[in-house]
Length: 205
Image (cartoon, rainbow, N blue to C red):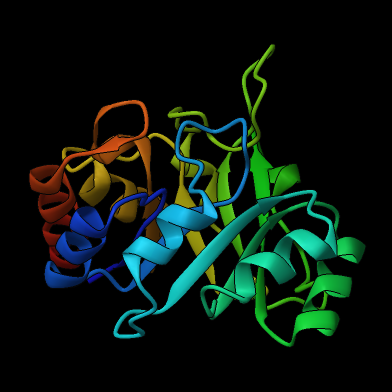
């Protein structure tokens, strides 16, 4: 069984669907250039129910940005696109767990120590010309994970869908997976059936 995180939720309907389907984490994106960006107003409409751990995704964030979000929604974990030192600073400041996002194209890119953090989100490097960090709906060769001794808990992300998540778990050895675009009917528009299918497939892997 792999644990499943559904990221990029923007509406109460899809948040309820993810929690009802058994998501292990739900994620909210606080990066304005993303089609999954959630406004403070939308976040208030979703509500602050804590039945499922909540993760906030931030890209090179200012501390004030995180503070604004935390006034509306408690976050168990901050998923941050930044260097290790900046991630540690945010961890110390807010007292929340921090997962650092790591782009991978080969074995050399995989973390070798925990960097003083709580975990990693391992995904493909952005393709050339991308204006956003992250996997951008592309997968890397999961076979590079073979033989890697993970220094901290980690989630596999990038290019995952209900159709391939079981293969991804088998090939990579991931104990947890993270999906966003792979459960959408259009960029930023989550599909309730795909959310359900993904969680079921991950939990069955």
